[in-house]
Length: 280
Image 1 (cartoon, one colour):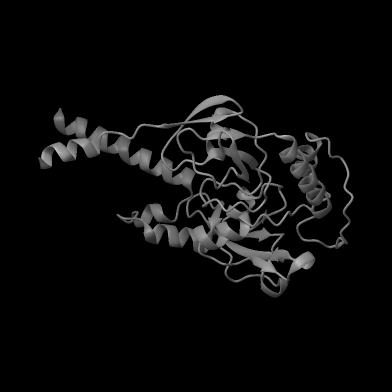
Image 2 (cartoon, one colour; image 1 turned 180 degrees about the horizontal axis):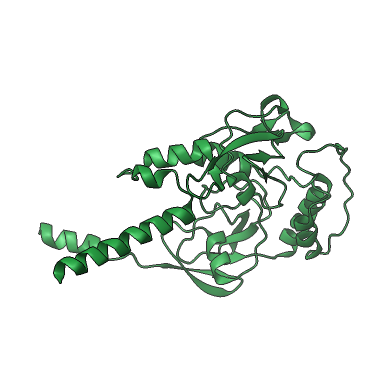
């Protein structure tokens, strides 16, 4: 009896079938409608979606109408879980109108973002009725839409907490506490990677990585003990190496990835040559 129960548990779950704009689509257990749409190549605009983070529907651009025939509601595709028989429409007149207004707001919030301009233009939105006083020295270059991805990845994944939302209402911005260089920043660049509007900027300056957007925070870089090249934030590299199990050999720990790969390859070659010699 127990054996039969175990076999039943090993049977893979049957995928559910949902319909997006009249097109049947397969979805896995727990998969969101937005993830299905992205995989199937069905355009649904979004800004705050990031696979490594739990969905939270901040940007509202991915609103769709979903439900059963005769009973639908407007909801965010990034938070809606696929269920068998679910029918989804991505571009009803009501949704298009809603997105157009959102794009006007984003154009006002981030007037220098080419990403927002291009997305808005697809909906025929090229200008905005909404005005916002912009700071001439905005560290995010008037490209930030406050999606929160940089804050979330810094806090939830990296555990650094170097940046957060500052102020309230129309004065809300993202930056370091008191707009001062942060001692908590790892300089990992995760915030740069997830920013959908390319508002976050960092650059290499000799032995330091400068987080231009985060109050000019400077993070020391580790230098390769072989070639001397600076290759990673020093503290982050040390934390990563310390977390490895088993630990990396000492002569490999201080090397950049390129030199480390060469050293390992040399070891492998020598080991094989030695093995061949012993065999002979």
